[in-house]
Length: 241
Image (spheres, one colour):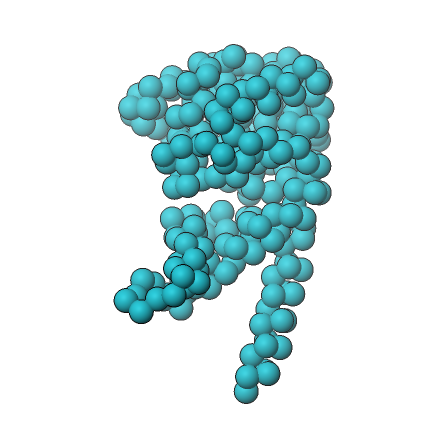
């Protein structure tokens, strides 16, 4: 399989690092990252060569995904499998369905790991697949590709994904951002529970504000979960005063 990756930031690079063990990898980016590609041992391309692949993966910010799709939709060759890697799925999957040209197959994906959590291994980590306009035989190929990387593949609808990650991802990042904002850090007197809280904070420390804002803005269920938490914390606080 030949795989193209559009977007070669921190996540695009870690994904390419693992995918290159199973396929030929072509990468491109809006800014020149040819040196990073060479160091990683994948092929940097410019122009339309990126579209001469079996699987084309977008590794761009959520808020840039629709724009990128609009820019490339007429360049993707029929028979290509087109995938996103957004940490939300309802809206990106709608964009994939709306903008993919006839003959282009589509599948939503969410690799449930990042550059920090996956720096040493993918073993046991999860990837969610949301099949859209795609043949079963190609779904099977995608599953085989990711299981060969020792990923646990979870099948879900875009709505199922976003309902669950509103809690398991967006809420976790919301709490982590709060801990970071009040300056919580390592200290000598610490409980196991406190150390676990620090792990939550560490989860978000290296992520961009754009990623955090996007995963909340574009998940239709995230705001309600945040409000529920804020409401209950306020009620608990009142009981203490």
